[in-house]
Structures are given as C-alpha cells and as structure tokens.
Amino acid sequence: QVQLVESGGGLVQPGGSLRLSCVAPGSIFSIATMGWYRQAPGKERELVATITRGGDTNYADSVKGRFTISRDNLNNSVTLQMNSLKPEDTAAYYCNAHTFHVVDYWGKGSLVTVSS
Image (tube, rainbow, N blue to C red; front, side, top):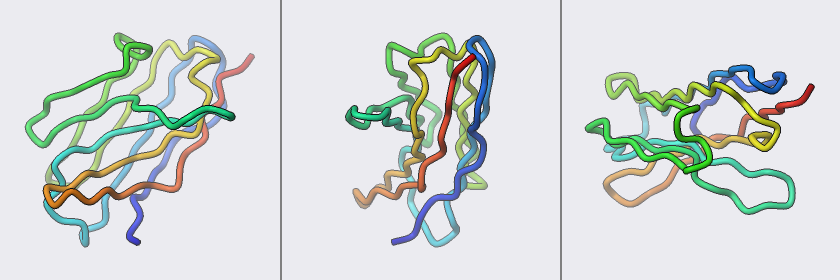
C-alpha cells in the first residue's frame, strides 16, 4: 500500500523542541483528516493530534499547549511542532491520512527520543 513520507525526529534533551513533517504522495486523493499517532515500547498506539481539511484540530491531553499541528492542503502535508518535550514523549511517531472513502494511510514511523 502507498505510504506517507515522514521526516524529522531524533534525539533531544528534556525541554527541547523537534519538528516532524509528513507528505502524502499525489496518488492519495480526498484526504479528510491528517494526524500523528505515537507508540512507546510496550504500549498501544495512541493519538497525538489530528487536523481536518478545514483546520479543526484535536490534541491528546498530554500534549496540549506543547505540540502544534498544522497542514498544507495544497501540498497534502502535515507538520507537528513539538516544544517542551518530556521523557514520556519518547516514542515512534506515525503520520496518518484518513480519506473521505474511509481508507487510512500510514508512514513508516519516526523515532523521537527525549533524554538527557
């Protein structure tokens, strides 16, 4: 299946910032919502933030006020700006595109490690 292309991630100290970006290939049409999910070792995948085509956003309580999601509809891209990072934010972050045809596309995952 077609995959989304992610970039960003890496190692950062607590309190630092990172930026994740994701682009959906042109072969993916009618994207309704784009977003980011994360999965820490030994835990279930969880929602981080989503954004609709109209710009409505939704954030997990744990990241509100620290993370900001934005989207470029023309380029089918989504960005997650992560500030004030904490060790508990350490996880693999996955980009998601959900279409109006109720099909989900995913990226391969970007590792974010928050450690001193």
